[in-house]
Image 1 (cartoon, one colour):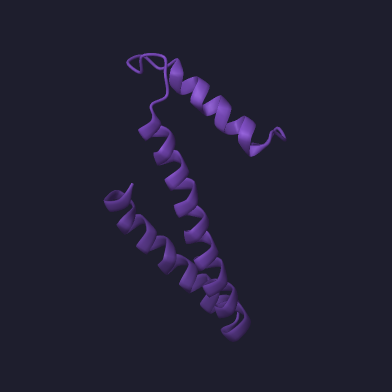
Image 2: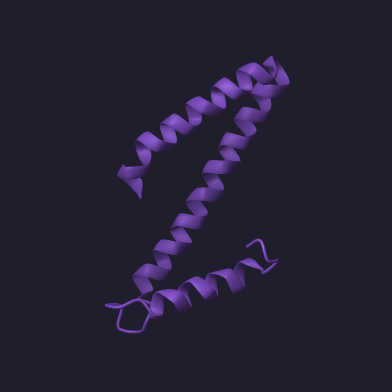
Length: 85
């Protein structure tokens, strides 16, 4: 989205590219669309929760602890990513 397009246009482009992928029958299934909506909502919740917690950590204890907690959050994300996505 570096070229200034909106989220809706970006999603349209991704879905159009998906339609052209061999083996997809030229349509986007409802289940795929719902998965995309679920994934976006999950990302929003995850980043909001992490942002609040890491912002509070920075405010309370400073940058070094915030960086350390950020690394821990990334490690947990990588460990759980395969289970949920």
